[in-house]
Length: 146
Image (cartoon, rainbow, N blue to C red; front, side, top):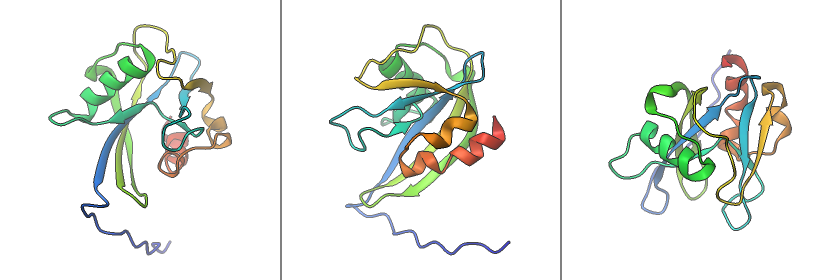
């Protein structure tokens, strides 16, 4: 199969690299948790895998543990995260690099802490949710891995 020639714009001060960690929380029934971006945030209304920006001096795993606590009120540890895949996506204003981890072990019940809606979804239903382009690019990979 031939490769697709894709031109990716270079990183600049006006188009920086943004490192974000995301998690595919998977419950006992094998469903994956999605969060809908709330009004007032960029890409509001779109569904995504929970997570967020990696802070200065923070690893992607530590950032995801922190984000899951802040966004969903659940506690987990870096040892409960399993690397799955990553997305590298050129948005107009930034280039997103997003490692994605699966997580099957946490304490607490995920609850929306930042105004977002939550949905537990079977992997074959992921394609039915409107997502940011970088998340959508992961759906086929997750389908094959999970």
